[in-house]
Amino acid sequence: MLSRRNLRVKVMQVLFSMDHSNPITAEEAVRILDRNIEKSHRLLAFNFSLIVRVADFIQRGSEFKTTKLLPTEDDLHFSTKLVGNPFISALRGNKKIGGQLKLFMGEEEDLLVKSIFKKLAEQNEYKLYCAKKETSLKDEREIILFLYSKVIIKNPAYLLYAEDNFPECINELGKIHFTVSESLEKLSPESAESLLEFPDNQAEENFAKELLEKTLTNNDRFTEQIQPKLKNWDVDRIARMDMILMKMALCELLCFEQIPVKVSINEYIDISKVFSTPRSKDFINGILDTVMHDLRERNEIKKTGRGLVE
Image (tube, rainbow, N blue to C red; front, top):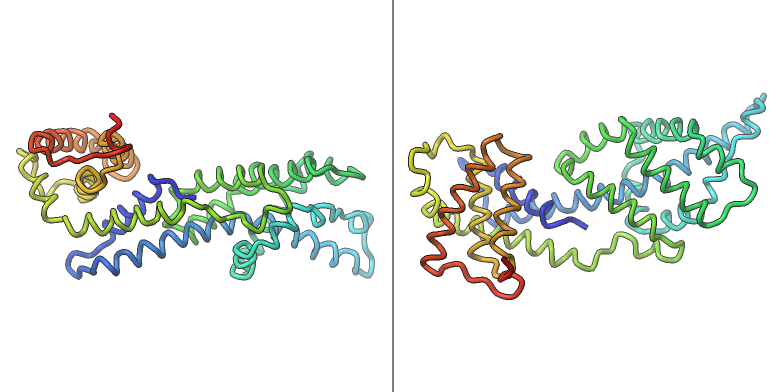
């Protein structure tokens, strides 16, 4: 589910958070990385669970309205059509989504779901859906796609909740929104059980762990390769983030034979645009270019397979 760029950012965040006055072992750093990756999986499952929570809110609202001593006309005609949506029923049966439903059941989550439903109830698309006597699978799919892409992720309360509860994953929200929308478009009531199972996950997460471990192990070596190229730059005044990104890039150049040189350099330049200073992209590009030239002259960059692509 996580792209390699997302995983590179997670490795960068772990390296940046490490306190050099009280260093931790590589094993401890990997455990931190594992926890941060798991938070991304939880945020993904949470996004799916919000769709189910809205249906649950409608069900509870209907029970409350119809048991009033003096129900209004609106109370009596309150639609529970979404509750029976087969795709929502399928999502409810997914173990990982079900786990999130149990975890996020506090007052803060209730207020979030209430605000989502309030916005949904105002939408013409939802009113038209509720007014239909019969709905096709296409209709049922379209309404949950609408609920997610036009109501949930557009809700300011949702964004605030994500920032407060998943701060390590904010840079991944766009990827997560795309993954959920794409999954809903392909979802069938029968396939929901295997939802959130990504065959390539383990290989990609192993890449992140290896990148973290090898960057830490070779830290002094990479520093020695970078320092001579700094010339008039004061090493102590260079943004710490820039040094981390350059060391990670060197790690990929020297330790990952299957990753093309250009891919690695471009990735870290792009990451620097988001996480470092305005001048960082040019600085990192210039230093890496000179270091790479020396490494190639000494024939230290070894690439095979896909890594040979220029």
